Length: 75
Image (cartoon, rainbow, N blue to C red; front, side):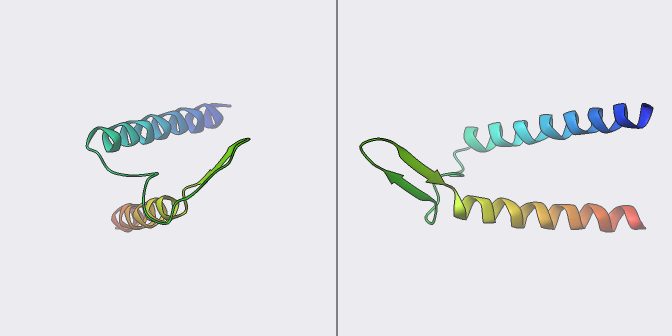
């Protein structure tokens, strides 16, 4: 049961840091969600939005960061 509690606390910390990163990105004016390549379709009865370019950018950045962290902890 202790290992589950540790994983939940670690997940909470990760979510907190992720939220802080999104907040800072908005504060500094980074256009996540408004990049060229993000799909936005608006009609009379509703709208559809899919952040394609933003998702790719976040994925590449997280891949680089996690690979660096993994490399540093293996030493």
